[in-house]
Image 1 (cartoon, one colour):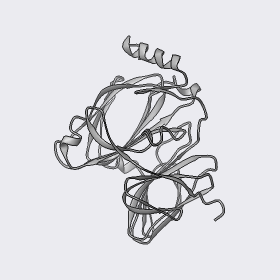
Image 2 (cartoon, helix red, strand yellow):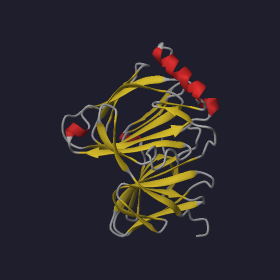
Image 3 (spheres, rainbow, N blue to C red):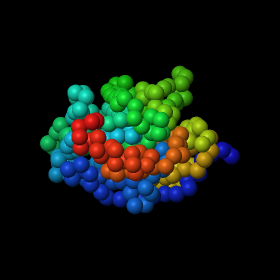
Image 4 (cartoon, rainbow, N blue to C red):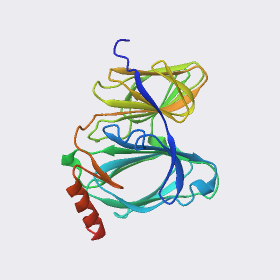
Length: 279
């Protein structure tokens, strides 16, 4: 128990909007916490009102970091400047390494019903910021599901000890060595996960109530964890959370809208490149 990570801070996500007016809840990247190295932003969108999501995220650029979209409910169509196109449905994941630059859009494929999910921004080290853009588009059936006693895990990235041995998430080749697990706890459920010491880690509760290393965390709250080797999630009443961790980068961060670099000069160059069509 000595290496169990504790909760350093709990943050209540704030209501915000992005894209063409999509309503969401923002925790990382808000006025409460601007970043959590290597994580730059965490948005949780979730509504049954089409007016809150129908305008979507029209074409916009990115450079210097990675965007991760995880759909819980609903469908979103992705298009980008490389010619790639596809639909993200319930349970699907897209890990996009923007690298030197890409222009993309994410638009709802539905006019009614529930739309919910997450967008996470993950920084890149200076040596990787201008890499060739890369996508990992993962269908729901390709996300492993591990069922334990009163616990169901969907493993997006990282490794989980399953009943029949280790289970690896489908996201690979990411420089920050991420962990990203969707943890569903029935009443009385308890799950302990190993996290490399030195990794930044958090849990975001999006349904019910979850005890994070013994501290109660309610819906729409982010629990930032101390250092250590393990984290424990449990619930007496049932709840659901994402558990995310990654290796911190420890470099200066300069950000301007959809560009994240190491200096203001690099930001100016990104703006010029976008304006002159040099993405």
